[in-house]
Length: 608
Image (tube, rainbow, N blue to C red):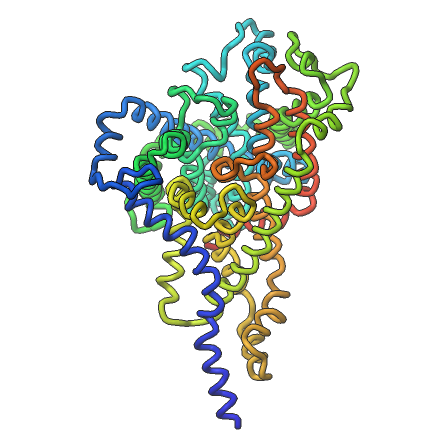
């Protein structure tokens, strides 16, 4: 009898992992892996989406590289967005993380909420706010620079400043996101390293360069690659900044170009070739960054590019402030002054970070005439509280909010269940092909969505899910990063508990549901928050597949309210009312759950 039970348990253990990972891999293969492969194949074809594709060989790439006059300027724009955002955001996020990690800083929870709020703010709402703040006729930025004698600048439309306008938005929304990873990395640095360096006479500069930065090298590599991938596929920032109209070539990024060529002109094969080229560029950038941090990741490697470039500069700065000054009368900077300057700088950055929110709230209570006034009306003397009921009367805002909630909840519940199942399979079982399956799946997390969106659009259309809420849900319930995250949490569950349950005759799914799931609730909460926020704020995919405005989600509805119709008055006030109504509650909710969100983002950088 005992041998029969053992044999049954053994068979369950052999079969169970495939049962646990199969639901995820079926969905993932259909809606991500196959469209990815199809995109690489479609790049060699000419196809309008109706008749059979016609093989062109390298024709799409030949036209792209040698005949398309706009492509290289658009490519340079994308490179500019990518490189500039990394060069600005990474140092700024690191300095902000050091400040938030300091014992000298007061009101840490408040500053963290302020700096991290852009993470959960709808990018469409943020872009609309920035578009109005940068307006050449009534924008707050031109009003501010007028006090120092600078004439108004056409920030968005001018070829000299348009890309910098987009960079402002990128820096605002990405700095807090990147800061979270650095904060997590700082917690894992052994404090004895600093004590030893101080005993050896190292200055603060030397400690930062030779202790902090090397220890943060894996995190820095992670955020550089992540930020590069995000910036290289920039879309909403530019698309919304120009109200969805024709984006000028001097500001246009590659994803907007894919949308124009692939969907608007129905050149699906040509659009896919641009997506494949994007993937090659992202892969090259990632490899370059990996090489740049090589010596920090491997002690046997030669000095990295960054060390060869910046090492002499850091040594020069460190030598200006030696550890032991020859002049004994020179007193060190007082702790009071250090605390004051730290809180002053962080407070100033916090106020700057709050400006889009303050503008959004104040504008939501103004008339359009007051918003367009010069000099700007900071706060209306007659707040227009009627903007809220007027907004709901003119547009189906309630339907858009319900649609967003349905999509976000459906994606969250389904993805959490599938990823927890599969994460358990990878964390607690040994089975044939485990390593290759996991590596393949995680590697695809680097593939940008624009590569798969054309074949995915065709696939979803043939399944009859275009212009429907299921079309917004089903393709996104199997995220690769979800398995990685849940596997990290489930690995920590003691194997002894699982073995004891098996010895008591518990089935594999019962063990998963009654023992493992209750122990990994923090991970489940983290993944749920990440998926909900991503789905709630999704814009590109709804823009592609939705046509009926009754099916719109909030981000798409925002562009509908803001859109300027011929012969109609611009709806600035109602657009800001909509942005405020849908943004402020999310930030309030985020203030209660941010620790789970931060834990989830941190796991990707410090546990991986």
